Image (tube, rainbow, N blue to C red):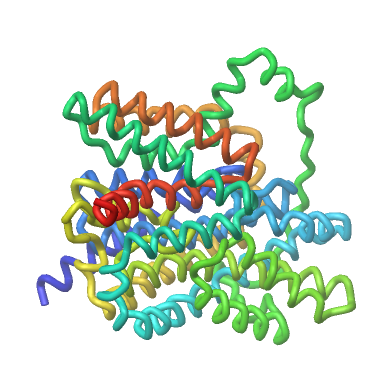
Length: 460
């Protein structure tokens, strides 16, 4: 009993920290999930957090961020992060109707309902797939190759992304061979370089006169923030009173569906399911509000399912989210590893039971709901106004750059820093110009460390 209480307190504390921190980060427009969530989760792991703490930190952080990312999306017309991009057009239409506050409430309420549905749904699908976990782990190198092709094919780059796997894998192998000559074996640095690739590409672009010319703006952006209107009593409004019966029904249906399709792009699932539901309504206001509730709900359910199902069933990052923002849960050397070169996988899959994943997953949803939901519903306008006027994006970027420099120097010294710069610049440019996004790049990394050695052993 004492052990359980200790584990529970660790889980609650780290979950609360993740929810508070990423409720704030979600307010900052354009903060990519992989660039923020993955490095901070990695830092939590390397600092020695217990498995339950790592899990609840990531889950609470992801759920909270996908609630508060609705604030800049609805009130400012700027996507809060990558997954908020499909919501911008509907949110802007609601702004033109003079009802951005209603759009915000629908989005956040859809997210909290979806989160509570997604955890048990994802666990159900994971338990159905778990009996095949041993077989899947045995054939992991070839499954990664297949999954990489599947994920790149459905990425924004499509054929180009699939073809880019070959040179990208070759680059990683070449860098591994180079650092091996100095007896330096890196893993975290590759991961961080991929995670912050777009950021590094933008920084290099600023240093170029030609790039700076394209990034220069003639005038300062001016934003109008809608007035704050409160239509409920107390601090914690009920999401079931914010959404009507049709919106609750479609949010629930799409949450279950998106909790099963864990191998597809979260953005693609958000767009596909949102547009399908929107097509069921002719009246414009009902169509927009239902679409926003469903789409933001799908951003929650896909993130939860694409992390939980591979983690519980296989212990391998076989989804875009698992290979990107949730990658440290699977591979954070020297603490966690996906294996390869004769090493058995060892990560949260081996350290937590299915019941622990379910219990602490629901605890994470509850923590995020208590922290992020009422905050976003009650203080959205004031928070958006504070961030837009007082928070420096340059300071946020500098903070993450500093964190990544420290981790790279810790792992490999100057070589670690050089690998991060190389991977980040190449990966960022490929993402910007070819649609070869971070999810595709992570699959390329896993192919380099798992599939290529297995292929070389096969051919002798």
